[in-house]
Every structure is written in structure tokens, then in C-alpha cells.
Amino acid sequence: MMASHNLASKGFAFLYHMPRVKPVDHWVYPFRALFSTHIVGDEPILVRDFIHSALYDPKHGYFSQRSRSVGVLERSIKFNQLEGRQAYMKHLDKIYKDSDISWFTPVELFKIYEIGGGSGTCAKGIMDYIMLNAPPRIYNNMTYISVEISPSLAEKQRETVGEVRSHLSKFRVECRDAADKSGWGEVEQQQCWVIMLEVLDNLPHDLIYAKDQVSPWMEVWVEKQKERGTLEELYKPLQDSLIKQCFEIVDFDNSQKTQNRVISKAQSVWSKVFPKPRRCWLPTGCLKLLEVLHGVLPKMSLIASDFSYLPDVKVPGERAPLVSTKKDGSSSDYSSYLDAKGDADIFFPTDFLLLENIEHYCSGWQRPNKGESSKQGKKRRTIILDTSSFMEEFGLPSKTRTKDGYNPLLDDFKNTKFYLSVPTHNTK
Image 1 (cartoon, rainbow, N blue to C red):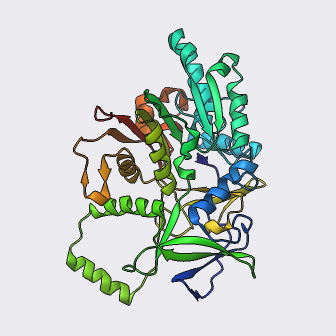
Image 2: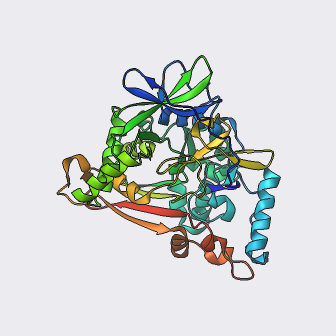
Image 3: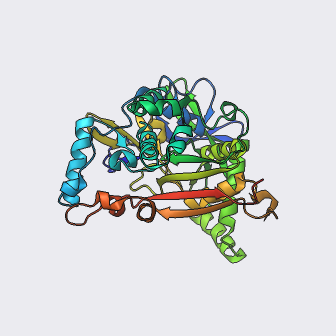
């Protein structure tokens, strides 16, 4: 996804209140939301379930109720007719204002032969390319399956791909959650490609909290306050299996940076003098999805691209998301994820080194709780590339160069990366 909004904070301010203690060893965090109460019922839910509902709920979710959240360009951009970066940005700004679209994927902007977005432009681009450039037998025997959770986007993909009639017999959309293993059926032992552009950033995350630098981490739940109609956070000891599993991988990643006792003791003293709450977002949705994919598609080759960082994020915490909404052509960013009420996109930065560790974990090679890796050797060969490096190697940058030499394909997208992963001979 390429965000089109102004990252300056215009969102709702937090409502600060003194925290209060509740029974059963959990606390209320002083962040409250006046909206989104339809997402949470009578019982508390985990943060990942709140985010999943805010984005994908069939009635209230951001992607479900906004069929125009993902855009399709009416015509290609003629880069060689633009003078330079200023002309390109002006043209791009006009596209967003005229279309009232929240964002376009990179493939929508450049119509390149790689991976696509929720509108189906990617699928059509890949199939067009294979039809025109590959031997006929490859095109005639190919199968392209899109797994899409949003019914409105699934329909849009069928329309886009259907613009070329011969594609329809080779393309199908399965409207379901890719992280639900039951939807995949039997294990597929054949080699295949799995393509995920700007998918990781919209996967549900969990949130953990510690009251200071040395206190134990606690998992965060969201609860509706019936008397006030607001949402509040609850803290409970780590008990959810997926959170604990992801925490082990993150903690294993951090443990690579050894820390001596002197530094540890200094931190303990410092935390007592200057206590500072800690908040950390865990990519549990990514972990769940990769576990499912490695289980049902063990010989897949994976291509993923996403944001490596997000500027001006107002939501607190390590790997915190940007929560952004757009209305009447103008964008604003919220200061709390609890403000999302189906009108806001919630997207996270991707820690690509952590992503690599998660995939090694899911492939069965690296298990942090065992303290060692499989003796069989790595099951995946992986590489992380800046978007400009990827495009120079695999794209057609000559097609996106403006008159003065500026090239948005290479010069922009500085906060995005590509992750490539293929099976090794150690995969049975």
C-alpha cells in the first residue's frame, strides 16, 4: 500500500485519566475511545481480535464497507512526459483528489510485471505478461488463485481480471481468511509461488505492556465500559498461546544482543528512579499466517513487500501502527488504535529481520525455546532487498524515468523493502 495521507497528526487526542486498579491482577490503561464500541461485546477481547474486526468485520470493517479503499488507475502514468519529481507529485496529488481513494498499491501506480493489490491489477498484469511473453503452453496451463478476505475487493478482482476474457478460465478468487487453515484443504506438495504485497502491514497484531523497564510483560485486552460506553485496555499475565509463541521469537531475536550483568543491574536501578512504561506490538497475525502457509504449502516460494518503517506514528509502542482515516479528500491520523471504528486503516511497519526469524521458526528450522536450530540445516534461503534494488534487478525502471532523470520507482518508496524466500534441499 502507498499511503496518500498527510502524516501530520490531526487525530483525536487521548483522554487521560488516572489509572485504577481492578481485581484478578489486571489493570486499566488510561487510553479510552469514544467509538468502536460495536466491535467489543460484553466480554473483553485481545487487541489482535479488535484490529481484525476494525479492518475486516463484514458489517463494520474498514476493508469490508469501503469498496473504494483500494484504487485502480483509469490510465497509465506517462512518466516520460513529466518534467521531474515536482510534476510527478502534482500529478499524483490530483489522482488521489479526483478519485477520493485512500491508497493505491505500487502496481497500480506503475503497471509493472510483478505483484498486485486488492483491486486485481496485479493478477491481470502478471497474466497479461505471461500471455504475451511466455510459450502458449505455460499460459494455457496456468492457475492463478487469489485469496481475499474482503467480498467487495474479491468482486473487484474478478471484474479487473475479466477485462481479458481468456484469463477467466485460469483465475479464481477464494473469498476467505488466508490465515484460517481449514480453508486450504489438503497439503499441496507441488512447488508454487505465494505473493504478498502490502499484506503484512494489515495483519492483526497483539499488544503487550509492562509498567516499567524491568517489570514482566502483560498481554493487553480491550473491554467495553458499559456505564460510559467507552473502550479501555486491561492487562493480564501472558497466557495466550499465540502471544507467548510470538514473544519467544521476539525475545530470542533480542537475546542475540548479549547483555552483561552490570548493564542489567544499571537498568534495574534506573527503572526505579525513572520508571517508564513499555508497550510492544507483536506480529501474531504474521506468525499465524506463515505457520498456516508452511503447513499447507511446504514448497512455496515467497515474495513479500511492505513498509520497513512509518514516519510520524502517534500510537505509542515498539512497531506501533499508523491509524489513518480519510474524509472529504483530507486525511487525519489517530493517536490511539481504539479510535478506529471501521473508518480508519490500521497498518504496521514490518521488521524484516524479525520476519526472517519468524519464517525460519515456521519452517521448523529455528526453535527459540529449544535454544538451538535443527541439525538438518536451514529449510529456507532468504534475502531482504530495498525496493530500489529489487526494481533495478527485476523491474523496468527505464519505463518510469521522467525528463530530468527523476525516477519514482527508484527514488521513492525508501521506507519499503522486499522479502524473498525459497525452499532449500532440506525441505522434504
